[in-house]
Length: 205
Image (tube, rainbow, N blue to C red; front, side, top):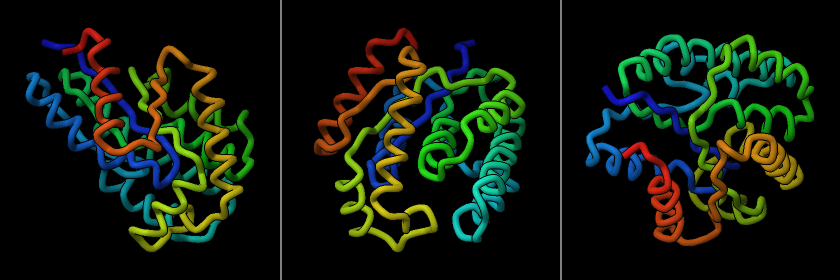
């Protein structure tokens, strides 16, 4: 049985990461992988209920962080870990790097507390690969405004998203062996070509 692999897609809202999930899933299935597509917050019935609260209900930064990690714990126990145990390729739209970027960078919440929650909830589980869709905050804002009404994160100002971007950069610098930085300002085919180049360097296929 092929070993299970865990790939996360990260970046600020509007970076275009979500549009590549289906393409990656199709590409992997063509190569014989059983693929599980999921997202955070979300992925299970309980986590999806918590997602609605996180995206739409007013709350302080600590409450927000606790709800995100509660959703993550259920997601890991109910979906991610079982999928990896049976050898599936798990493709997840956001994971813990988003918590450090949004709650830590954007909200200015304690990185020390986030680190403790990460340890408690994940018990050492980290993605095998994180595709970071790096995009200037101003460009991402233009993209978001053109496609949808904002949730409580997307409605934040440009300075918030600049802090989020800095949070992602900090996480990437701390784990360079896991992160692959993509130039998300390019056209979709160019970004997809970058992703394919990253995947071809791995011995998973």
